[in-house]
Image 1 (cartoon, one colour):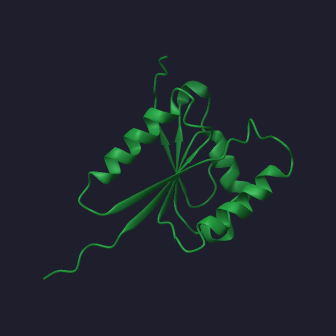
Image 2 (tube, rainbow, N blue to C red):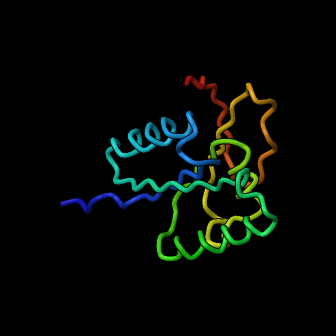
Length: 131
C-alpha cells in the first residue's frame, strides 16, 4: 500500500476584498481547479487591501498578523495576482515565507510586467472584468 501523497498548502494573496468584481471569480476558480486535482491541496486566501488601508504602519502590522496566523501552517506556494500582492511580498513577507516559491500573475493590459525578484515566477494572463 502506497502512502497518500503529502498535503500541499497554497496561499492566494489577493490585492483587495472579494467584493471587487474580479477577485471573487478568480479566487473561486483558483480554489476549484486546485482542489479537483489528484493531490490534496489546501487553498488559503488572504486580502492585503493596502489601497484602502493605506496608513504607513499597516503593512508591518499585516506582516506580523500573517506570520502569527501561519506560524504552524507552512506554505508550499504563494500566488500573487497583481502588483499589490507582489509588492507586499517583496517588502513585507513574513520571514517564514521568504523561501516559499511565488507565482506572480500579471495582466499585460495593465502595462509591462514587473521586475521579479529571485524565487518568483511570472505568468502573464489576460482577463476581462465584466459587471
